Every structure is written in C-alpha cells, then in structure tokens.
Image 1 (cartoon, rainbow, N blue to C red):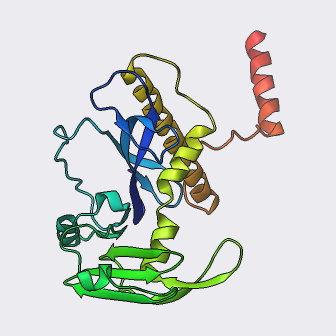
Image 2: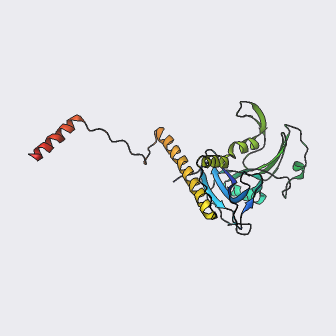
Image 3: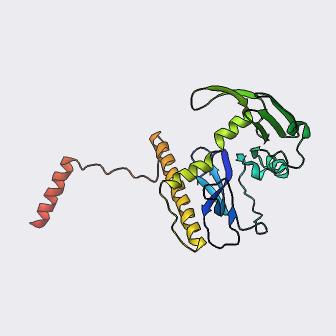
Length: 256
C-alpha cells in the first residue's frame, strides 16, 4: 500500500475544450484559457497525482472529505478559507497558502500595511499566522505550519536571499501540479473530439500512467538500497557443469 509523503500541493489544471458544455470554464492566465477544469492533489517532490476531481459547476460540488491526516498542504490563494484552516489542524494537517487582500476576516493592520522591500510583519490568531512581506511586490501569506520568521535561502543561481520561512516553504513545495503537467506534456494524449468525456478519460489515463512510472522509479531506488523488492524476480542462475553432465547421462539411459 502506497503512503503519500508529508508535503502535498493542491491546484487546478485546465484541459482544452471549445465545444458546448455546461461546466466549461474560462481562465485567462492559463495556456488553454477555455476548457474543463480539474482539481489535482499531487506530491510536491515528484508531481505524482494522488487524487483528481472534475469541476462540474458551482452547485454540483461534492462535499467529500479525505480521511488521510498528518500532511503539510500547500494551496493557491483561490482556495483560501479561514474556516478550512481552523478545522484542518484538528486532523493533524497543516496548510500554507498565499492570501488575497479582499478576503473576509483579514487583519487590516497587516493587509493595509505599507512595507519597504525586505520588511516583514505578521499577526497570530490561535494556530493561524497571517504575514506580509515586501519584495518586488507585497506578498500576503497565511499558514498553520510555520511560525513566521526571516531565513536565508539559496536560489537556483546560487544567490543567497533573505525571505520568510512560509514563503520559502510555499515556493519549494507548490510545484507539484506543474511537474505533473510537465510529465504529461512530453507524450501528448488529447485528440480532437466533440465528446468531452473522451478527452477527460484520455487525460486521466495519462495521469495514472505517469504516476505509475513515478512509483516504479521510487520502488527501484529502494531496491538498490538493499530493501527487498517482492515484484522483481531474480535472474535464473546458470546450471553447474556437473549437474549438466548428470542430466545428459540420465537422458541417454532413458533413450537406451
């Protein structure tokens, strides 16, 4: 049984579809812009898809709750909900999200604060922290998994930069959906079709194939470290020469 890692990311993905459909959406900052929206829960490290759901309209959302606990969940600002943040820690699940300034119950002393580049302020309410950091533009974040503070990080160019720990954690673990889309894009599966269910089925099938490949890679890495791999059978050993001779003699006696 596969157990997902601690850090998970939740975001949406868009499948291009221009036909007539009741729950077709338009997202201007996406490459496809118009199509079918998928909600994807992915592993932050390798982009393996753990769960997927199709957006079926505003009034047709399922009130399903996952039973898994003990994770750090990284979410986009579209899904920010203070009520959700307050109930998840009870299930030992912590979240880190970017925050929109027009959300209800936001602390005005944080959202309306004018900061210079590098300045960092935060407030706490129970187990929830709301912070604001001045970079090239102001960044609002809300978290239950970190206590806000400034740390030194290194980017991909080897440059050191000081940023809040919640922003650094969000940047490091929010790329799960992008990695999943990247793996699927190498072998394009969508085909022209007027039936949306065919296009959705092909995409979900490709997600399952990509995730299966990730599991196979992880399993083989573990087997190389000395762990027993019950799925891979050892290669058959060659028969010793003395046993070969005995077998030949027995066969000759039978023929006589």
